[in-house]
Amino acid sequence: MITKTIGELAVLCGGTLFAGDEKTAQANFAGVTTDSRKAGAGRLFVPLSGERFDGHDFAAVAREQGAAASLWQQERPVPPELADWNLVLVADPLAALQQLAAAYRLELPVQVIGITGSNGKTTTKDMVAAVLATVFRVHKTAGNFNNHIGLPLTILEMDQQTEVLVLEMGMSGFGEIAELAAIAHPDYAVITNIGDAHLLQLGSRAGIAAAKLELAESVRPHGVIIYNGDEPLLQEGLGKEGFVQEAVSLQSFGLGDTCSWQVAGAAIEAAGASFKLKAAVSAVSVSPSEPSEGPGASSAEERTAAAHDISQADWRIPVPGVHNVMNAAAAIAIGWNMGVPVDRIREGLAGLKLSAMRIEQIDAFNGATLLNDAYNASPTAMKAAIDMAEQLEGFGCKWLVLGDMLELGPEEAELHRSVGRYITPSKADRVLFYGPLSRFASESAAPQFADGAVCHFEDKAALAASLRSWLQPNDLVLVKGSRGMRMEDVVRALEK
Image (tube, rainbow, N blue to C red; front, side):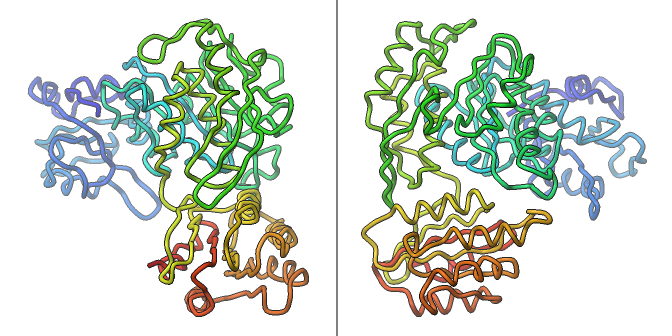
């Protein structure tokens, strides 16, 4: 984590010392927090303000917890009980936090990988980090700590010996990815896909693509952009003259014949997936303008041989779904670009541990298999999860338990209907919907099934109780919905 003197802090974040004496300037801090309850001994407290709270009101608590210093908005009076503390006056504590993180990132000889997309960001981040950690000292975003506050905190928590920083970048509006990239200065970018999330804020899939491409536009010279080659909107955006920086390599992954990294032969099981990955060497750079150094370094000849080995290998990941195969393809591509040997890439993927509620396999109380994919949902992600359920074999009854998809804008009713129409008896045997918007999906799905196979619930507890009474030991249950629906409550009601 970042360790500095208070004097150095003031310089890096553009602030001034409140006390102004040499003793204050020479005092040290280690680590940063915005939560006064987690201030801990020696940390820097950053008081952020929102609509319903003001972090300055909790600065005294942070000091009691052992914090060494605090930022302080310069227009606010300093209360007497804090006048003898190590305070750094700044115009805006949040902006100062971001400026400090950007300075710390540039201070260290670290390679930064930024990952964004409508779906699959967190899973891809976990996969990339797992692959690279077999060779490099890696620091990654915890959970989905991926916004204008979480990203700088992630950077500042990075150990000074870190070699690779893997950052997830989320957004809900235009300019937000650009803001994160300005802090992170990425050397590599991964864009997983363009879906339907945040249609309410961005208006269209084209708008979503433009917002995600802010990351690609920010990649440093001689960097690499790895993107979903099956998405025309990404191809179009990246193809604009002068869009990317000098000597940036563009590499695509996907099912299409023109992809630099082409997925083929995917086989899906509940415990994972296997696939082949054809590396089109002619479509990827094998002689980077700025060769990497350190444990991942490799020559052009070695990289060409590694691309051949990737094409010959049988790949396997411990999570199901074609969409996760695509995420793995991006992670393999990053590993190859950074000189990770093929056997180490395989080792990293085999030992993958995903963040919670991303197709998390759990045993039900009676031995049935639960797939907890309840972290979030959009129409694209929902259909991918439904496809995954269709591909799984060897189960009795396949249940889909689906909650509302939120933040879809004026088309939310039709988008739910489209998901309902997408569900057929070949994909699942029984479907249980929860939430007011999911009624539209239920009404569209029901005509395709026998009576009683599709049910809608307004009460989540009633849904869980009904499913518990119907569930058989050999059944499969996939649970998914937007974060606000908290569909994991159903999982908890069923788990062993």
